[in-house]
Image (cartoon, rainbow, N blue to C red; front, side, top):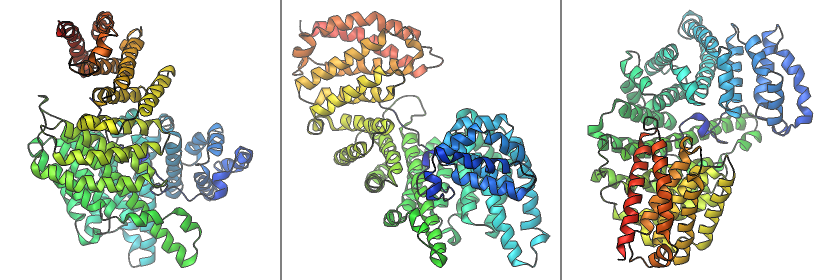
Amino acid sequence: MGKLKRASRSRNARLNPLGYKRKESSEEALKSSSKDVSQFSPVLNNLKSPSVSEKLKAITTLSVYIHNEDIRKFLLKEKVISLAFEHCFCDDLSLVSETLDFLKCLLIEEGPGIGKYCWRLKIWSNIENYLSSLESFFERAVTGSENSGDAPVKENNITAFQGYAENMISFIIVLAVGSEEMFNNVTANIDNVLAFVSKLINWNIISQGYSNDLFNCFLEFLFEFSTESRDFIEKLSESPDVQINSILDFLQTDRQNSNILGKVYGDGIRFNYYEGIGQIEHKDEASLFILNSTIKHITSIDLNNLRSAQPETVKQSNGGDLSKSLKQLNNTRNESEALSVGIDVITSIFEYLSYDESGAEERIVLSPDLENHILNSVFPCLDELLDFASKSDESFFLASKIVNCFNNLSWLFLSCEHIPTMWFNSCLKLWDSVIFVSGKTEDIEIHRDCLNVLWALSKCLGGTISSKVSDDMVQSMISKCQSIIRESQGDLEFVLCSVGFLGTVALHINNIEVTRTISSFLLALTYEFIGNKNLKNNINQIDIILESLNSIYDIFGDKSYSYDYEIFVKEDYISKLESLYPEVKRMYKTIDKNKHRHLKLKAEETYINLERFIKYKKQERQ
């Protein structure tokens, strides 16, 4: 069976030209090449300056240029991280804030290795110190005596505080979502940060004291950590400071009407909280409520505005127009992020509905209201979004996320006790849309995700796919798999999806030569991997063997199939499968049931069925 996909919920996964609020880099900054990097030596030296203002200017400059790969490599070679830790973490909130923003940008560009290095340099001690100073600043300058009677001073203090707090929380999120190890490290030390966030959220609910940008940053924090950690959800439920219902109620007030991003984060937090505490008796009802809310929020976004709003508009503006353009760009970024988060929430709901908590592996029965809402509201919305995203380079990042969402929906309906008639018609349209997305990119991960959807759709459509699948498509896919196998570090998950898809095609294509080609490929794959002496340590290869054999059982399941005699009998598949049997049994015995319980069960079923299948095929024509 195909794989349900976890939503790509991390901030890194949602980065896009509109949604990523990086510092606006100049054309020169982005185009600077390796011949220019020496000019940054003085900037690095300024990090050692005794002057805080010089350090601040230097770290801000580096943040602007960090997106250039040549410059970034030079800075890393010159130990910019160590310099920043040694000279920029101090008592000055502005300098520490900009340093955290710089490190966040570096993390996003370079990946989790930077986060692990920062952790070894005791980044969390610096965050704890900064947090303490930030709380003091809030008590003194935002809510205390320093702002009394002077509106401009109060406004300036709040503006400064918002920047300080947002940079810290954003850095913590990016640091944590980079890897499981870093997430566990951060979560184990998160209590003081959670208390700070909770306090600020509660203060904002009462006073509306700061911007929605900071409020949304706090909501993102709750969303990201509750997405990945049930322990974090328990912290939320047990903390007297965190009132989830108060947050959700506040998002429904008139003051939050235009805050679509905040509302979608609220939907995600509500779902994570519900899923985390495991209230399965109202599963369909809760899923319907959250789906309805999320769809309502993301359909309120004008896609035409997203099409027309580009960062270049800001660069061409000045004066009052510049202020207006910056505000429009920020709104567009928030709406783009809202779409991304909303798709993640819907993807997670489909995954949740597909999971049987009882372990009985019974067919799923969706309530009529939920089924109708998915078909009549959710599918049309996602279909429109996929059409929008697949035709725009700036929004193409959304297309891959929507494909994952459709993947979970497709496998959900296949797991249902009955497949809705309306879904069959939707499958045909979705097939064409997914093919279009796949043709727009060379990204192997997107190709794999698209193929996973086609696998599910082909199982649903049956013989209808004969008009959708060409000989060239089959040959191209097999060639790609063979190329991947030749590469020791190739994407074997793509091969696994191909096996599942091609096995379904072979059964329904009504073309003996195509079925012959596919079945021969599946058998060759099995021989290819079964002889691997290190097979027990390669789970993907084992999965491919099992899926290949199960596909062969399906393809040749009955002698009445028009191709059965021509291929299975004439090419003596019985002897080939008999030669594989001892190797398949040996493979099964090497799988560690404690580490890979589901794979062990699947392997046991496959090898037992192999013996039965051989016996059945021998007797079938007697």
